[in-house]
Length: 296
Image (cartoon, rainbow, N blue to C red; front, side, top):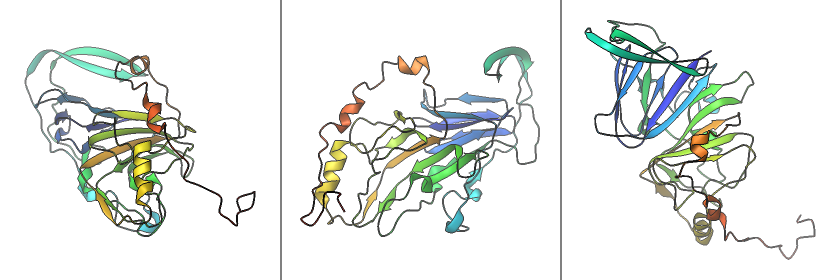
C-alpha cells in the first residue's frame, strides 16, 4: 500500500522538514510526500491553511502529453527536491505520529528522526511551483475539458481513468469565438473537489474565497453561477480576447465517490445556501422559424 500527500498552502508559507532535507513551500506551490517518510511541518509566518490529498496504491506522475508532444503542462525540470540536511542532537520525549492501517499511532524517542546524512535515488519528497505550469487551451472555438490542465495524475489500472488528477486553473488567455467561455454546465462520472489558493474563480463571481472549497460528487450537475452566466451571455459574440489574472484555483478529480466526514458536515463554515447561486438562471434559447417539433 502506497500513501502520498499533496499539500497546497493558500495563506502563509510552510517549512517542511523531511529525512531527505528541508522544503520551503509558499502559497502557489505544492509538495508531494511519499509513503514512509518522516516529516514535520513548521509555520514560520504564523497559522496557515491549505488543502491535502491522500492516496493509496499508486504514484503521482506526469500525465501523458499525447498530441501535445514533448513540451507543455508541468515540466519535469521544474520539480525540486530537498538538499541533504540532518540534525544530530538529543531530543528527549520526541513524539513520532505514524499512520498505519487507517489508524494513528504514537511513539516516543530521545533523538531526532531527521538524521539522514546523505541520500540518492528518485523516491523522494518534491515540490512544484504552479506558476511554472504551461497551460493549453482552445485558440478558436469550443471549450477544452479541464483535464487539459492536469499537473499530476495517479492512474488506475483502467486506461484513461484516474484515482485522482490534480488539475490547476492558472492565469491564462481566453480567446474562443462563438463559445461560452466559462466552465460549461455539466455532470460527469468523476467527483470534483475544487479549491482556491489565491485570487478569484472565473465560474463563481461571489462566495468562493481563498481557502474555501466545493465538492460536486459524480453525476451532480453544476456550472457557473447566475451572475457569471448572465454577464457572459450579455457579451454575445463581441467579446474579444481577455486574460484571467490573479488567480490560482485547482481541482482534485477522482473516479471514486468521496465520503464526507462528520467534522466537515457539521462545520459552521458550510455554505447551506450554495444552491442559490443558480437561482434566477433564465433560458436564452428559442425555436427558430424553420425548426420542427423535434428541434432539428
